[in-house]
Image (cartoon, rainbow over all chains, first blue to last red; front, side):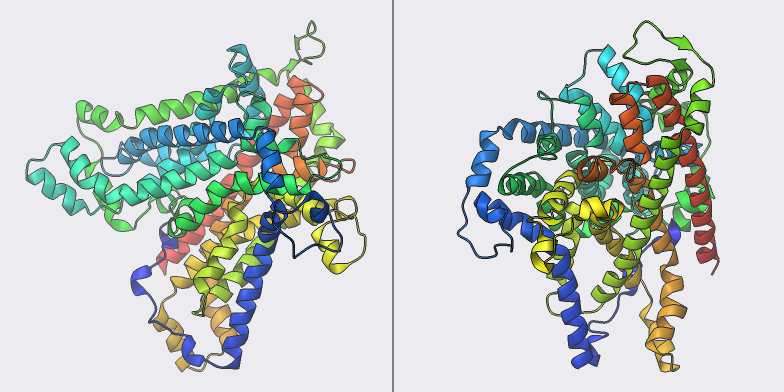
Length: 289
Length: 311
C-alpha cells in the first residue's frame, strides 16, 4: 500500500484556489455547505426528535419548532438502558486494551525486528478479517454454549479482541515503520537494552498511533451488532441490543427511539469528532496517512 | 503481490528488513516471541471455529430433531448449491454490496472534490459530513426505518408530501440508501486524502499549459486517485458484504426474500430453522466465495500499486 501515502510534505500553498474568488467560488462554497447539511439532516432530526413530546415526534407535517422536553430520555432510562451502556463500555474498553497488548508486540515483530515470514503473517492477519463473521457464527455459538458462556460479557470481549486484532496489527505496524531506524541504532550504540529502547524511544513516538488504533477498535466494538444479538441477551446485552425492541414497535415511540439512538451513538460521535485526523488512517488500516 | 501491499512505508524499511531477517536459532525465537501471543490468539479464535464449521457442514443436523444426527458427506453442499433461497440471497448480496459501494464511492468523490478547496467553515462542513459514519449502524437503521421512511410521519413524506411506503415499495433501495448515507463519509475521507496528496506543481504546470479544469481532472486527478478509489471500494466491500444490521432492522429480509442477503439468510437457517448442517455448508460456501473475490481484488489492487510505483 506504498502508493497510497498522502504526501503531506508537498502540501499546497495556502489559498491555492481561493485566489479565484468570485461568484463561482461562492457558489461552490454554498453547494459544499448544502451537501454537508443534507448529510447531517438525519442526525439533526434524530437529536431534535429525541427532545420532543411523542405527539410532536409523530406529526405530519414535521414539527420543527417545539419546547424541548426530556420525556424521551426519562423513558429510556426508566426502561433501564444503563446496564446495556455499561456492558458496551466494558466490552469496548477491555477488548481495546487487550487488542493493544497483543497487537503492539506483534507489530514490533513484523516491523522493527521482523520475523522471517513477516509477509505471510501480515496476510494471515488480514485474511481473518475478510472471513465473514456469519461463517463463524454457528461454531462460535455452539462452542460458547457448550462452555456455558452464552450471555457473558467476557465472551464478547474475547470475540471483539479477535475481530479488531488484524486491524490493530496493520495499523501499529504502519506507525512503527515511521520510527527512524537511525534512532534505534543510535540507542543500541549507546548501550541501551531493548526494553529501555522500547520504553524511552519507541513508545513516545508511537503514542499517537496507539491512540488512533485504540479509537478505531473502540468504535468497531461499540457499534458491533451481529455477534452481540446472537450471543447475548439480558445480562450481557450491549447498547445496540437495547435498540432491538424498537424494530417492530407500535404506537407512539419515536421520541423515545431517537433519545435512545442519540444516547448510544454519542460516545463514538464525540470520539470521532475529536480524533478526525486519525480516523482516515485507522479506517484504511494504516494505508492512507 | 505481497511485497507491494505489505510494505507500509517505502523502500527504506524494506532494506532494513532484508538486512536483519535470518540469524541464529536463539535470535529467531527472540524475534518470534512478541508475535506469538497475538498469532496464537488469532489462530485459536478464528481458525478453530472454521474447522468446526467444516465438520458440521458434513452432518445432517437439525437442532429441532435432536436424535437424528448423521454424516451426509457433501449432501448439505448439494442442497445449498441448488437451493433457490440461497441463490436469491447471493444475488441480493451482490446487488446490495455493489450498489452501496458504487454509489458511495461516486458520492464520496463528489463530496471530496467540494471539500478540496478552502472556504469559510470547511472544518465544520467536514465534521458534519463524517457524522453519519459515526452513528451506530443499528441506530441509523432504526432512524431511517421509523423517522425517515415511515409513510405516515416519516421525514421524506413530511417534507415532500405524498404517502409512499418507501420500505414496502422500494425495499432494496431503502436498505442501500441507508448504507450509502453511512458509507459516503468513509469514501470521502479516503478520497480527500488522495486529492490533498496531489502535487501542486503538476496541477499548476497543466494549467499554465492551457489545460481546462475538466482536462486536469480526467487526465491528472483521476489517474492519481485511482489507488485511493480502489482502496475505498475494497475496504467498503469487505464491510458491506457482511451487512446485517440494516437488513435485520429495516426489512427483515423482506418482502418475501427481496432483501435477504447471505448473512441474513444464514442467520435465518441457523436460528429460525435450526438447520445446523445446512447453515455450516452455506457458511463454507460464503468463505470460499469471499476468498476468491478477495484474492482477485487484492491482485487487481496490488498490480495497480505496482503500476503507480513504477511511474
